[in-house]
Length: 490
Image (cartoon, rainbow, N blue to C red):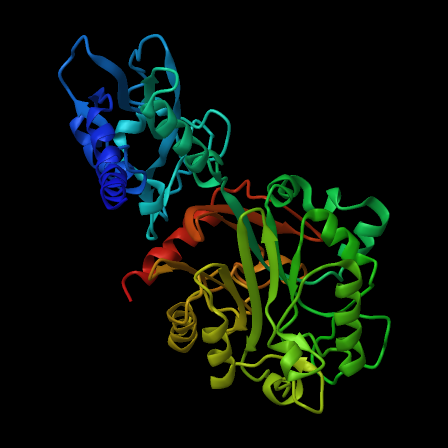
């Protein structure tokens, strides 16, 4: 019995080893360009080949399979011949490239024919103050966007072979969304101050949005997210706060702004309390009823400090507004009369507590926007205080800062990979033609890819009474760019 037991033990231990040693080795040819060797090493590190597969580069009659790695790009579309009996090909990686230029360059695109005139880099390496350019009017995610380089694994394997089994096992694992989904550019736009009196509301009600927005309507509606600053109370109340100007809009006007494309309206400005507490809370209620976002305003400090959030396909967006404007000459003091307290509805104000809230809310997994109503009216350059505040917001983790209040265009600055628009001027705000540059406006449009700004477009707009239109004078954009370039010297 003991001898039989010993024989059983020996067979149990050594027979598998013997059979393994006698098992047929699969000789597999590999064809991998030198620049893809690292890709293959990473692949087999994550998905090891069976031990009985012998990789070789020497062609032999004993070959049982073939592994090929190849790259397809706009520079080289040649696909190697893998021979008959190929098990298939799978995508290992995709890199999207883009031509680049300075973000203040007026060019927004380039023809593929002239692509060699620009630095071309992976789009994830495009960071402000550089911006990416469209190619033949196409952007990443668009059908037929040309600047894509892809690495494929192709396998030729006999039916039932170890190589076929390995390939089948990794095919399902590698064909996931990160490799097969074409992530598109998300476009976010911002405009300046909007005041709907002085004939604008009347035009809405009589003729609709077209006669007010004219040819700006198309670029506005094409944006995935549009933000603006609404200067006034949306209310039917008539109890005015003592001040120089009181702006009030009918609730129905919001429908026209929404039709024009507006998704978010900031109200943390010096006109939010034009019709007192009732007018302020009415505004909150009407915006909520229309499904238009706002933030930095609420019935309590906690409500006011809550960012507005939305999801645009794969992009999470967070927006928070607050006030930082000086006391008006008429004596209206926003910090005292409009800031939210535990006893009064109101707006978020520029305090250390607010800046700490912004810093804590900033999330690397979302695109964070701050709208700040501050600076000094009718000044074409931001003050040092205004500039320091906006830069501090970026240092807290914000990707885009949109400023308002000066009523004229100020420059835009690329800072630490983020974009600061100190003032986008007036947008829908007529009746100020006697003030220099008060009728010059701009639509700022940024293209987001993987939570960062990669594309920047400036669309100049001119105000003509209760209407606006794309600039026909050719003067607005050069002046705006000059203001922006001047910021680089300070």
